[in-house]
Amino acid sequence: MKIAVTYDNGNVFQHFGRTEFFKVYEVEDNKVVSSEIIGSNGTGHGALAGLLAGQDVDVLICGGIGGGAQNALAQAGVELCAGAQGNTDQAVEDYLAGKLVNTGSNCDHHHGEGHDCGHHGEGHDCGHHGEGHDCGDHCGSGQEAGSALTGRNVGKTCRTHYRGTFNDGTQFDSSYDRGEPLEFICGAGQMIKGFDAAVADMEVGQIVDIHLSPEEAYGQPDPNAVFTIETAQLPGSEELEVGQQVFLSNQYGQQFPVKVTAKEGTTITFDANHEMAGKELNFRIELVEVK
Image (cartoon, rainbow, N blue to C red):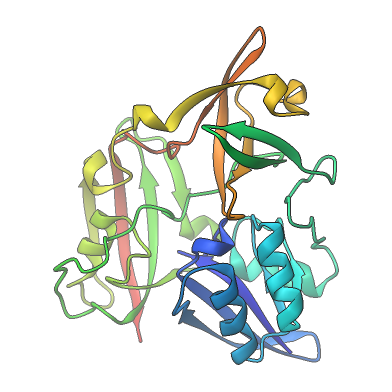
C-alpha cells in the first residue's frame, strides 16, 4: 500500500490544491518500509489527483481540501483522510493505528459540517480547527521559484536538526525535541529564504547560528490580509472566539488558515497573515545528512 501526504518541511501542508510536494510512504504489514518526497508536477486538484493515481497511491492524507478536489480523488480511486496536522510521519503512524479520522472536504473537527460565507463576493467554507496550523517547521514562505540560490547542497535532499528562538531567547520550535531531523530539498522553495540559504553551502556535521530579518523569514504583515465580514455571511461564526484558528476556502476549493482577531456586534475580523510575519527569528542549524 502507498500513502501520500501533502508535504511542507516535515509537516502536513494544509492546502491540497496548492501543494508542491508529497511525501509518499510504502507500507507493508501495516508498517512503513520506505518513503520518498516527490514534486507535484502540476497545479489544480485534477492534476494532483491524476499524479497520485499515476504513483499508485492508495491513500491521501492532507489538511484542508475542497469538495471538488475530494471528487477528483474519488474518481482517481484514491482514499482521502483530510484534516491532519503536524508531522507527516506521525500522521501516517496515526493513520495506520486507526487514530486518524477523515474530517471530509470541510476539514471541520468540531461539527462535521461546513459554513458558507461571502468575502469580497467569493464563496468560502469555514472549517474549525481546535488549534492553529503548526508552521513550526517553516512552511508557507519558502524560496521563490527561479531564485539564484547557489551552493553544494542546492537541489539535494538535506536532513537538519535545528532550534528556533525569538530574540528574547524563547524557543518556538526544535527538531531536537521531536527526536527527528527535518528533511527538505534545498533550494526547492520548501523552506523560508534565510534557512534555505544557510544550509545551501553547509558541510555535513557543521553547526551554524543565524539571525533572520522578517524579510528573510515570513515577511512583513500584509494589511490587505486582514478583512472584516458580517457574521450573517458566515453561518456558525457566532461560535468562533477571538484567537481561534479556522480555515476558509475559496470558490476553487483551495483552503487557507486565518485567525479570528476581533468580533464586534454583527462583524467578525480575520487575519490571514502567517503567525510569524514581522518577526525576527534565530536558528541553530546542524546539517545531519545530504542525499
